[in-house]
Length: 120
Image 1 (cartoon, rainbow, N blue to C red):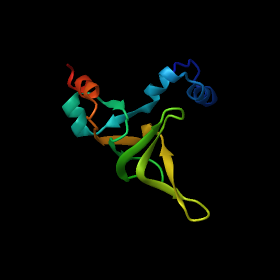
Image 2 (cartoon, rainbow, N blue to C red):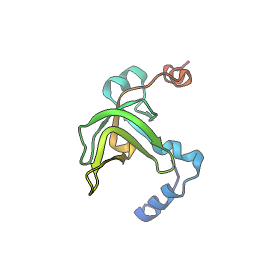
Image 3 (tube, rainbow, N blue to C red):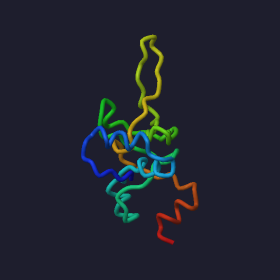
Protein backbone atom coordinates (compact mmCIF):
# COMPACT_ATOMS: atom_id res chain seq x y z
CA UNK A 1 0.00 0.00 0.00
CA UNK A 2 1.09 3.53 -0.61
CA UNK A 3 2.40 4.93 2.67
CA UNK A 4 1.01 8.33 3.53
CA UNK A 5 1.54 9.93 6.90
CA UNK A 6 -1.41 12.28 6.66
CA UNK A 7 -4.94 11.22 7.55
CA UNK A 8 -6.48 13.87 5.33
CA UNK A 9 -8.74 12.27 2.71
CA UNK A 10 -7.47 14.53 -0.07
CA UNK A 11 -3.89 13.42 0.53
CA UNK A 12 -4.89 9.76 0.79
CA UNK A 13 -6.77 10.08 -2.50
CA UNK A 14 -3.86 11.85 -4.17
CA UNK A 15 -1.47 9.10 -3.05
CA UNK A 16 -3.71 6.45 -4.64
CA UNK A 17 -4.03 8.36 -7.91
CA UNK A 18 -0.31 9.06 -8.14
CA UNK A 19 0.90 5.65 -6.94
CA UNK A 20 3.67 4.13 -9.05
CA UNK A 21 2.80 1.14 -11.21
CA UNK A 22 4.67 -1.37 -9.05
CA UNK A 23 2.52 -0.43 -6.03
CA UNK A 24 -0.85 -0.52 -7.76
CA UNK A 25 -1.10 -4.28 -7.32
CA UNK A 26 -1.56 -3.82 -3.60
CA UNK A 27 -4.62 -1.67 -4.35
CA UNK A 28 -6.22 -4.62 -6.17
CA UNK A 29 -6.55 -6.96 -3.19
CA UNK A 30 -9.97 -8.21 -2.11
CA UNK A 31 -11.16 -10.21 0.88
CA UNK A 32 -11.58 -13.96 0.61
CA UNK A 33 -14.79 -15.71 1.68
CA UNK A 34 -14.77 -17.50 5.04
CA UNK A 35 -14.38 -20.90 3.34
CA UNK A 36 -11.38 -19.73 1.30
CA UNK A 37 -9.85 -18.02 4.34
CA UNK A 38 -9.98 -21.31 6.22
CA UNK A 39 -8.57 -23.26 3.30
CA UNK A 40 -5.68 -20.95 2.38
CA UNK A 41 -5.00 -19.27 5.77
CA UNK A 42 -5.15 -15.79 4.20
CA UNK A 43 -7.62 -12.93 4.51
CA UNK A 44 -7.14 -11.35 1.10
CA UNK A 45 -5.50 -11.84 -2.28
CA UNK A 46 -5.10 -9.90 -5.49
CA UNK A 47 -8.07 -10.17 -7.85
CA UNK A 48 -7.38 -11.53 -11.34
CA UNK A 49 -9.48 -12.21 -14.41
CA UNK A 50 -11.55 -15.36 -13.95
CA UNK A 51 -12.10 -15.09 -10.19
CA UNK A 52 -15.70 -15.25 -9.00
CA UNK A 53 -16.59 -12.34 -6.74
CA UNK A 54 -19.61 -11.10 -4.83
CA UNK A 55 -20.25 -7.36 -4.69
CA UNK A 56 -20.78 -6.24 -1.08
CA UNK A 57 -21.35 -2.49 -1.41
CA UNK A 58 -23.13 -0.08 -3.70
CA UNK A 59 -26.11 -0.33 -6.02
CA UNK A 60 -25.10 -3.81 -7.18
CA UNK A 61 -24.61 -5.31 -3.71
CA UNK A 62 -25.35 -9.03 -3.71
CA UNK A 63 -24.46 -9.52 -7.37
CA UNK A 64 -22.11 -12.43 -7.98
CA UNK A 65 -20.14 -12.87 -11.18
CA UNK A 66 -16.85 -13.54 -12.90
CA UNK A 67 -14.20 -10.84 -13.16
CA UNK A 68 -14.12 -9.89 -16.84
CA UNK A 69 -10.97 -7.77 -16.62
CA UNK A 70 -8.86 -5.76 -14.21
CA UNK A 71 -8.04 -2.08 -14.76
CA UNK A 72 -4.67 -1.76 -13.05
CA UNK A 73 -4.27 1.93 -13.85
CA UNK A 74 -7.48 2.88 -12.02
CA UNK A 75 -7.34 0.05 -9.43
CA UNK A 76 -10.80 -1.18 -10.49
CA UNK A 77 -12.29 -4.47 -11.64
CA UNK A 78 -15.11 -5.17 -14.07
CA UNK A 79 -17.54 -7.87 -12.94
CA UNK A 80 -19.89 -9.73 -15.26
CA UNK A 81 -23.45 -8.61 -14.52
CA UNK A 82 -22.54 -5.25 -13.00
CA UNK A 83 -23.52 -2.60 -15.52
CA UNK A 84 -25.40 0.67 -15.86
CA UNK A 85 -27.75 1.93 -18.55
CA UNK A 86 -26.77 4.94 -20.58
CA UNK A 87 -29.28 7.57 -21.64
CA UNK A 88 -29.67 5.89 -25.05
CA UNK A 89 -30.48 2.55 -23.38
CA UNK A 90 -27.22 0.72 -24.00
CA UNK A 91 -25.62 -1.17 -21.12
CA UNK A 92 -22.01 -0.41 -20.19
CA UNK A 93 -19.90 -2.23 -17.59
CA UNK A 94 -19.48 -0.47 -14.26
CA UNK A 95 -15.97 -0.70 -12.75
CA UNK A 96 -15.97 -1.69 -9.07
CA UNK A 97 -13.37 -1.04 -6.39
CA UNK A 98 -11.83 -4.35 -5.22
CA UNK A 99 -12.33 -3.36 -1.58
CA UNK A 100 -16.08 -3.60 -2.17
CA UNK A 101 -16.07 -7.23 -3.29
CA UNK A 102 -15.42 -10.63 -1.72
CA UNK A 103 -13.76 -13.44 -3.64
CA UNK A 104 -15.94 -16.57 -3.53
CA UNK A 105 -14.03 -18.75 -6.02
CA UNK A 106 -10.44 -18.49 -7.22
CA UNK A 107 -9.08 -18.86 -10.73
CA UNK A 108 -6.19 -21.31 -10.24
CA UNK A 109 -5.11 -21.70 -13.88
CA UNK A 110 -1.89 -19.87 -12.99
CA UNK A 111 0.42 -22.46 -11.41
CA UNK A 112 2.51 -19.79 -9.64
CA UNK A 113 -0.60 -18.43 -7.95
CA UNK A 114 -1.61 -21.93 -6.88
CA UNK A 115 1.86 -22.62 -5.44
CA UNK A 116 1.88 -19.32 -3.59
CA UNK A 117 -1.49 -20.10 -2.01
CA UNK A 118 -0.53 -23.63 -1.02
CA UNK A 119 2.65 -22.35 0.64
CA UNK A 120 5.12 -24.43 -1.37
